Structure formats: C-alpha cells, structure tokens
Image 1 (cartoon, rainbow, N blue to C red):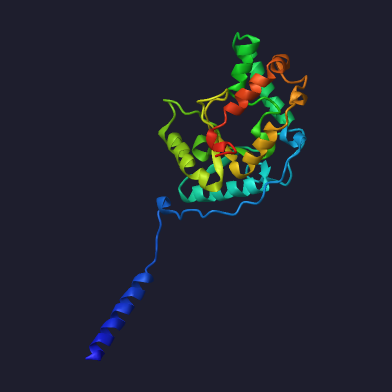
Image 2: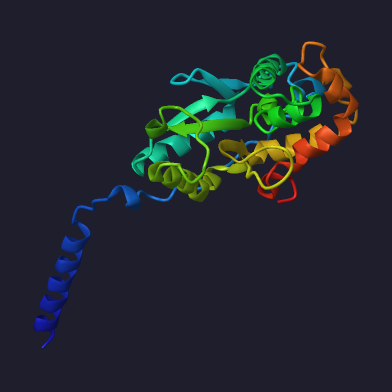
Length: 259
C-alpha cells in the first residue's frame, strides 16, 4: 500500500521542480522593484560651500552629460537611470552642481532677457527672474545634491507642464514622481508656494540636502552673496530677508528636513 503513495509523491515532486525551472520573462512594467541602498553620512559643508563659493567634496562626473554631483547623489542617479531604462525611459542629466559664479551667469542671462523683452519695474523683473532661477548664493545646486533631469523624448529640454504638454512628457513626469523617491530624490519645486514656478525636472537628494538646508538656514548673514556683478543686486540687497523667505518657502514640504 505504501508503494503507490511513494510513486505519487515522487511524481508531484517532479512536476513542482519542472514548474520552478520554467523561464521567467519580464516586460518593462514588470521590472524588479529597486531595493533600498544604504546611504552614507553626508559630509558637512562649510558656509562658503553652502553659498557656492567653494566646491562641495567628492564630486563625481557623469561622463554622458559632463555634469557633476556629490558621489552618493550621482550614484543614486545612475541607479535611477538604470531602473528607468528597464521601464522604457531614457534619462538625460541636464544640470547638477553649479557654483555661485555659474549661477550668477544664469541669473544675469534671465535678467537681461526680461530687461529687453518686458517693460518691468526693478521689483517686477527680480520677481520674474526668481520664478525661473534662484538668486546666486541661494541655489540648492550649490550643494551638489540637486539635479535637473530630462528624458530622450524631450531631447534634453526642461519642459513645463501645461495644457499643451505632450502626453508622453506628462507620463514621464508622472513616472518620475512615482519612482524617483525610491532612490532618495524629491521633487523640489511644485509651483504652488513661494517664488519659484513648478519645476517637474528638479530633483533633490533628500538624505544629503535635508542636512544642508538646516546648515544653510543657520548661516544668519547672507550679505556676502550680494556681489556687485549680480544683476539688480541693489534691489536684492534691500529686500534680502523677504527674498530669502520666498526662496525657502518655494521648496516642497517633502524636501524639508522634518519630513
């Protein structure tokens, strides 16, 4: 009586083994969920580094874009990029670390554009520029933690979200909102607070940037950023406390230290 039962058990065992040996195929939407990666302790930045006058430590360059970020930030971006490719998206890094002087060039370029194209008061011009770019010295890009990320279908552009945005671009930004936080990134500017418009391309590496935001807010005296080569610096100087409040208030609560 035991022999038939023994043979039946062997047959079931063989069927189970055969089932387990079946090849597993995955579509892009079935790519394995990324596992959390231990994050190293962020190095403290000096006041000069927080304000963009000196480079943060251990910057790592992305050879495809020639952009740089702190090592842990860049490595997290590379993991995000690899995962995105499995999902059918091809990321392009547009901007990473920017010094005070690089930020000043961007700020002045926007200021000249608004002087040429729009008849704005000094106050209106500074507000318009601030909606596009941070005041030199107040940019999160100085810390080596923040990245502007595009996708191949955007041809490296940083596209706004509005009623005319192509659906594929909308889908890409939605994918980033769902997946970038798994790699430590938060969407820094959502456009519903402060001075900065919605920037669906701007991602901040929270494990580092949350510490640097605390350090940045503890500086107290920001007057060294009021460089005489910064466009409209006299208005910025007169209104620095208000401008600083608007800059900080623009950041999404998800990127703040207490979240």
